[in-house]
Image 1: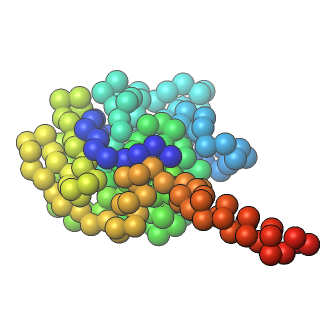
Image 2: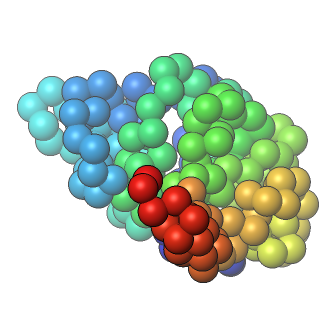
Length: 201
């Protein structure tokens, strides 16, 4: 998992509430267990017309937002069925942080496990960043995980809370496997000792 430190980039505005996981990645794309390749189908039903062509009015199809790393959205983001494919699709597209007033619990937890920072801010602050994001490439939002701040184009900084353990994992690029591998020496020592003490196992 890539480390998350500071991101300064374009934020895509998605002013919708109750964005569910089926909107993020529709059910027909859940057959794969690979984390890569899902970005092209992110928000598939909103991004594409019935004939498969892009809808030019959808935010991520607009030139200014094709390389967005931050998504600003409404409350209860990631609700609906629990599917880890939702953060996989966001990450594969290039989204490293989502800013919203609230999230569904399972989606929120899955984000941290996949290298995405879900930031909770009060509605007024989200509204201000949403307006900022609507300025496209002329607006650069900075997410600083170490200092736990989000800064708009005018330099206004908003503080956010994040669990210290989750912060540690993101800063160091540690998913569940990475956390286990940190204990590699202790695991090896245990296995060696167990082999000597219980050779029949």
